[in-house]
Image 1 (tube, helix red, strand yellow):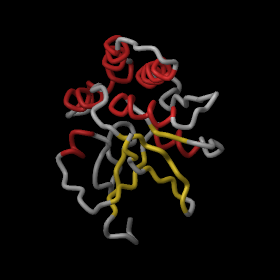
Image 2 (cartoon, rainbow, N blue to C red):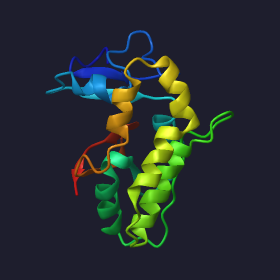
Image 3 (tube, rainbow, N blue to C red):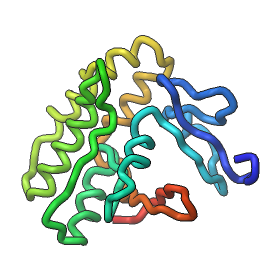
Length: 173
């Protein structure tokens, strides 16, 4: 970031932006900023760590409910026999049910099923992590509404490794 004036540091440790970061990991906060011409460098406690630890993947995508349908369309282009889900929020004291719920929903779509999304999205709202975050993060309820919105965006998020850095660029689906 210090070498590139068009970069902003975004992310969280324990739900809060670390000192010196421009943005936290709040979708509400991010949506209220003009990011035109900016690149985000992101560090999160789970998602970006999962990307770094998935370095052997042939094709790697970041996913969430807001891009679930687009992610499925993107994956189906490759006609893969096997898809592996990396549940990034699992750690001691957290079962990552919000991440697992998304993976199970996407898996159902990949199998050609038409699951009712409501129970999956309810699991996100009722997850242990959500209950803990609700107590400490000021924008939690607005953020939750954004995170638990299905197919808000029509792009997939493939991850590429470029010059030693993991890069995510939106790809229309």
